Image (cartoon, rainbow, N blue to C red; front, side, top):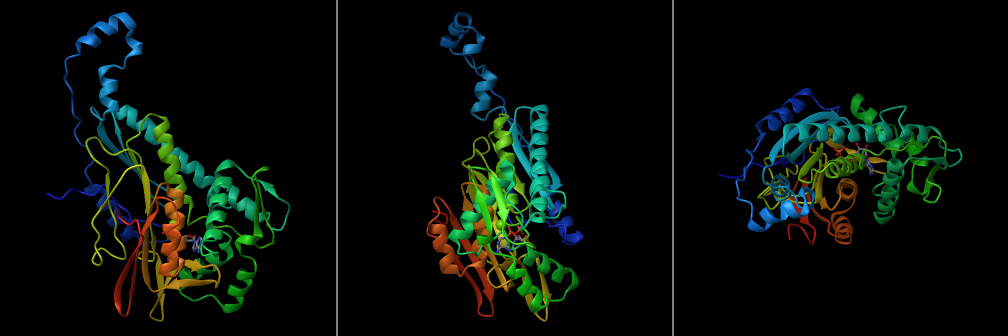
Length: 382
Ligand code: ADP
Ligand code: MG
């Protein structure tokens, strides 16, 4: 029997999406196995151990249950889902007991909530929004989460020649409104938004931990990177609390640590474009992250044209047509932002960027009048 995937990567549920999309996702979640029965070990202690324990004291040798835990035995599978960051966050862990799992999963969700509260551009009171409100003013001190995400963003902006750009906030705002109102933004508004965007207008000072937005009217949008970062941080929270076999999915951005007991990796299904086309065999990943970006789910149609929620920051226009990019990287902050960047870039350039990123691999699928075409990076599934 084919193994059930641990996760379907392309499953973002944005708050703007329809209720039946959410219902469909919940159905997928319900169909996933909730608990894998724990393997119990009944092993006779070795002679050395029988002698060593009384001599050395209990604390010098791990107890048999601790030793079994580090080998992944005695562990059961636990999972929880909660809405955060405009999407569904799902956490799967292997732990020795329900109590051990629950409190740590709680800490991981709390970490996601904390990041959302500082990085969301939907919240007027977030640290990010306050920074945007100070655009045109002097450099402002920013916290470690925001500084780290802004640094990674600027790095990728340079490497992608501006295809990824978190200063595109005025443009993404225009296109969000366009989607709500089913009307394209007027060209003078796009021009005005373009005039107050551009990653070169954002200056970071690593020594002082400050950020400065050069022009009034600038606005930051971390929608293409913050979910991947949250997945990394939630995974880190679990690891620090002793759970190092875990999966965190923040919508379509998935990060995993060590594999489930007895497995080589976490089985993750990727669904580029839609489930019926270009079906890919599932990925098996450990200590890695995978993100899928594209307009398979978030888009609007007008005059027979499909407009994506991803925009080209250089032209101010939303991407059109069907495309989907899946990126595997070591960290979610990279897989998430690279998937968005590569979506904007021409396939060959985008894949060059992936090949130049250590350990990264990508699959890009584009559908047009001629049919479906897939591009794979050098390391894809190697
Ligand atoms: P999803 O939110 O579906 O996971 P992405 O990770 O691709 O998809 O992020 C898309 C979001 O990123 C948009 O909704 C917008 O907030 C922001 N965005 C759109 N275009 C860009 C771009 N070129 N560079 C950086 N961020 C972008
Ligand atoms: Mg992304």
